[in-house]
Amino acid sequence: MKILAVSDVVVDRLYSAQTAEHLRDVDIILGCGDLPYEYLEFLVSVLNVPLLYVPGNHDPQYDEQNPSARADGCDILDQRVTRVKGLNMAGLGGSIRYKPVPPNQYTQTEMYLRVISFLPKLLKQRVQTGGVLDIMIAHSPPRGIHDDNDPAHVGFLAFRDFIRVFKPRYFLHGHALVYKGNLLPPVTQMGVTTVINVYPYRLLEVEPHVR
Image (cartoon, rainbow, N blue to C red; front, side):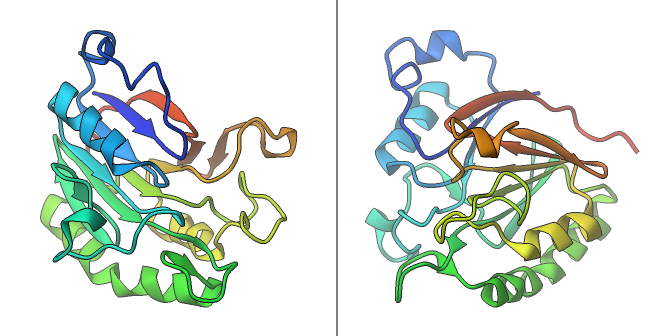
């Protein structure tokens, strides 16, 4: 199963008439935040596959009643779990809080509370499917993995604990600038979990977990 993961920066090569030809074998698109919704809508329309995304700190606050606050034709995965084409997925958007009252920014404690709030959904999914969590998507990285020391790019401690407890096969995120030498390499192994910074895009081959 081929997955296209995108975040933070619009890539001209993907935002073109040739996208459908170049990526015709993509099965799922995952958005890790801070991308114009027009870009996500373009990708889902030309590739005609499921697109799931979480909001970044520069995205509008999600509002089910406001069409402009969500990407048309795409599914928001923030604090939600789902199963798509045999893969169990979950998502948590947002970044560390670095402004007084911004959308999609949280303190370390607030992100712990967000994780706790959707634990019942995760446990229910595990019981119903009998499988592992294949992919967790987030905007921000875990603390100490691909994050930075400036106020806007510190990672979340809650994500490290989430990985330890739920052991997703993959943890995908954006937000961190991969061209900064202190944030390399963009792929790190944490136990059984492969943590990947997808900024600005990455193609992955992921097969459904076989019990």
